[in-house]
Image 1 (cartoon, rainbow, N blue to C red):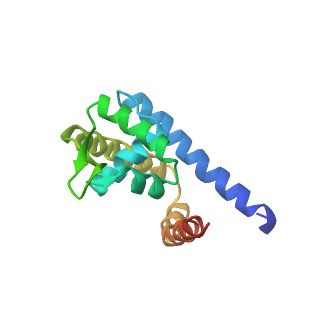
Image 2: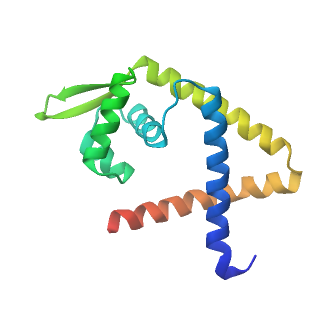
Length: 150
């Protein structure tokens, strides 16, 4: 792989894997959640009580986009919007039990799909992917820091 084409080829590969996983998971789990809904749900489960503006900052989305996602997830029974006792004008987002169950099922099925895909690879390819995980996490940190600085 030529050095100048590596970033594009690398991202195309990551996006391709993500897209295929998302499509397969959508067929297995109902009701379907869009990518932004899943990202917000994951964030709220990790950080119960997070506010809409902090969630928007964390997800690099506009506040009104997050508000729309919150409304959709609330209607589906996955999020509860509570008044923040420290600032009555602000809301805190809390996950419901259904949200935790939904994410647990999603993680389980995603893990199964990835394990099946990895089982079809040779041991050298599996080892290369495993060895790449720390570098991918550092890349994510670098990209996150650059987004915070801009």
